Image 1: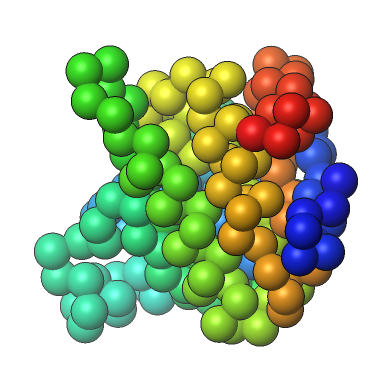
Image 2 (image 1 turned 120 degrees about the horizontal axis):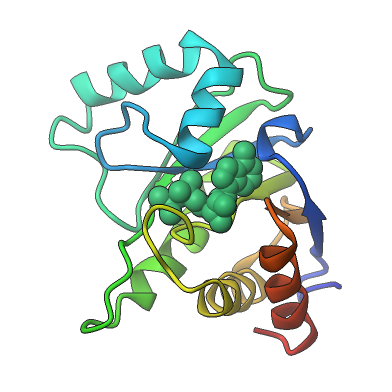
Length: 178
Ligand code: ADP
């Protein structure tokens, strides 16, 4: 599928740390110091360089941590990518609508990627793991936001989905335009 700006949007089932892309997006937490899920996998496979870069960011610009919905780039270490863009998804809440923050993760990550001159960007399904966001809604927000904002120099946005359920929900969101 192509966005109005001519960006190709693709779906892949698999492990994001095995992807080759200019940018691999990490579903980080505000500490930037690693965690479970995608975050743990990225640090494990990417090696200590990524954590060292995150520690530097903590010491310089993000002493209080990275705010929810924001994004920041580091080296990709040993991953087959040029940069990891770390973004902090919102924790799902049934009583409060936090979808603007989830959309912001995709928008800000793409903004940072474009600033770096990245052409290919791989995203996980942000907030849909430990942070509890329902996959159908998380997929709709992801697809809608990417269709709205992805633009050159980015030429491909790839959603890397870990399991069949995530893949099916993203497929449906893509068919209906989010
Ligand atoms: P969050 O804290 O933002 O919810 P998680 O990392 O817990 O982040 O989960 C986000 C999504 O990424 C979940 O759907 C989870 O199944 C998926 N996931 C976990 N590990 C990987 C991986 N190595 N590659 C791609 N997706 C992954």
